[in-house]
Image (cartoon, rainbow over all chains, first blue to last red; front, side, top):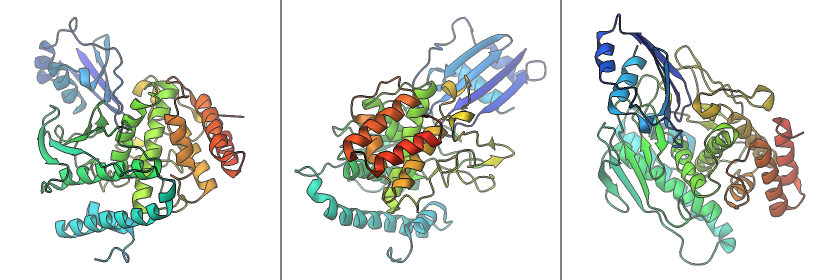
Length: 84
Length: 342
């Protein structure tokens, strides 16, 4: 399963992208197993100026989440994928 | 070190970049003293117009997140208390003071909400955290990753930018998406650079009009994050990419990222402010800044205002403040040049 993350916003307004695949990334497999996409997260826009906005694509599911609404498992996931 | 001899911008560079902590501290103190002297000098001229009564004073608290992402963190410095000994925390304290002083002296505004709101900053947020933000009630700064970005407390205009988000929140409350969001961003850039220009005593033609100068790590190919003078030219780097800001409506960027490109299209009103301020000349906070400030805080601007609505509002403010004089013409020409008005 492929996971991509696009981080936009932030004071700098500089976009960052990362992508990884569970086939070659066992850590990603572990991180994904902790995420329940049906319970994940409130994606209504938060209006915190200059916070990071994460667009997370897991398989075919799209989420757009402000940093302040990332759950702990999702936070670990985006940090991991952006390092790739 | 005599502050009269070393120009403030050199002091600032030393304060921010010197490898010698003692030298940094000396430069930093000189900058603060220098700014205080210059403010006194200005106030002695401006004083008759200032409202009567004792001038307002800031109420600052600096907290340390100790590299966690939990707010607000542990208090390391309070108003009037001793320095913490941590350069980042003490710089955050000084920059809150400089921003408070700017709003008070330039526009008679008592803190972020106009009513003496306590100013709180959390430093050392997260690990290698490449951002600073206003969370609705306080400032948050990361240390940067050290490879692309340095400590976000370094440039004064970052603090000015973030606290201005607080001012906007308490006044026009511009919605943070699309054109009203880009205006929200632009207003933070405008007053961010004005805080710095006021602190350094720079006129419009002396200023660099850069946002985040001194924040990029030395190996990054770029001078800053944004340029109000020449949007789109601040950096061009293999890792960071190229500064995506347009300078006019012909190059407006439609995107769904970043709340509709609020950090991208802010280049257009940023450049309009630069054009108006340099055309008017002198200290940019006194006339162009006053027009923008009164437009933001005057109660007439809709929270959903687009560029055209904001341009019209600045023209109405310019007429009210200055009649149909050179100031009005400068603002009118600026919005025309960036293609917001015909």
